[in-house]
Amino acid sequence: MVLTMAAVAANKGIQIDKLEAQVDAVTDVTEGGQRCKFSTIIDLGHGLTDREIKILFNSARRCEVHKLLGGQIEFEERLAG
Image (cartoon, rainbow, N blue to C red; front, side, top):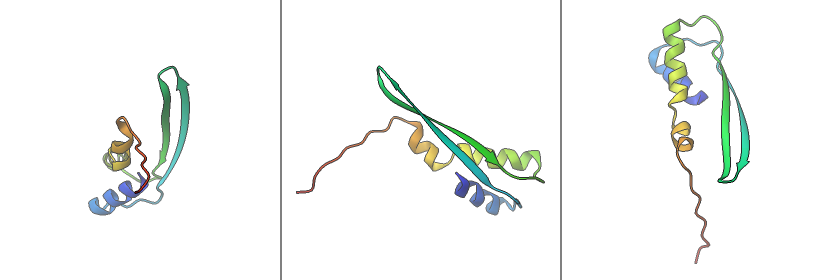
């Protein structure tokens, strides 16, 4: 997420003085299995316009990690040989 925002900022010429993300994960166990919720606080520092904030925030929300984790995930393990 932070790398995506940094790349977008560089591409768009947005000067950022701070770029931090704090991610907390909460896992709930239910009858149907386990569910994990990620809660993120993004700190973009000061001096950005509303438009720049929206651009960076939306890039964080649409980063590749979100795409991977947003859907149902399956794991398959196999031994070689």
